[in-house]
Image (cartoon, rainbow, N blue to C red; front, side, top):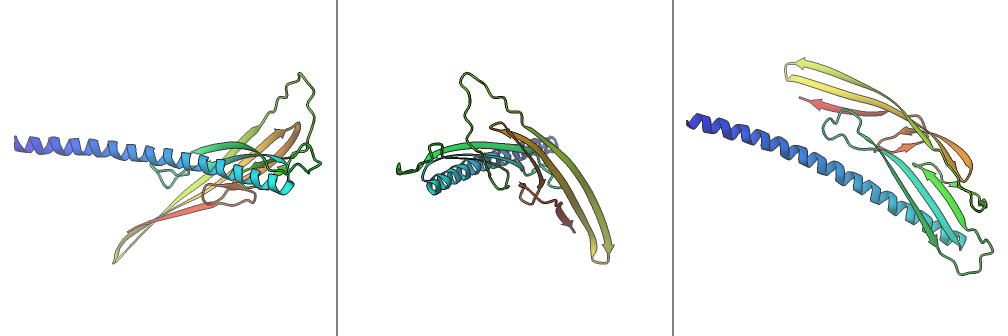
Length: 201
């Protein structure tokens, strides 16, 4: 009977421990997503404020960012792709500017922002903007096992490459982007491969 009680306690501890690990993984992913969304909002507002102050006028700034989230359950695989979008409209003027339309900029990921020229929209018309984003992902995992007198060493290496191809229509003009996954989960211009290594002894 005593052995049955120990077995039951061990089973309950294993089940409870697994549930706690799953809950922590969910909380980490959720908090990281909220943190990145808040960072994107703050960066957009600061950029709009800076543009409005420099132009002594109003500024509209839109930022769209794609990020690879951390993979908690399997660190040797790339994480889930998330997109964050925010827009800010700031007025910082003393009333002396002769430009009645202000500044309008659009930024995708870490690329330089694009200046969107003012274009009058006819009354009672609806503009339809079609944006497309395509990811091409390639990954390779390599495991090297070394045995010697001191013990066994296993080195696992992940090499990942993710190309984001975007076609964005803003105010009637189409813009094309090709960005690559960089360290930190960010996308930017320049073809690179992201590598991660884990050593077990």
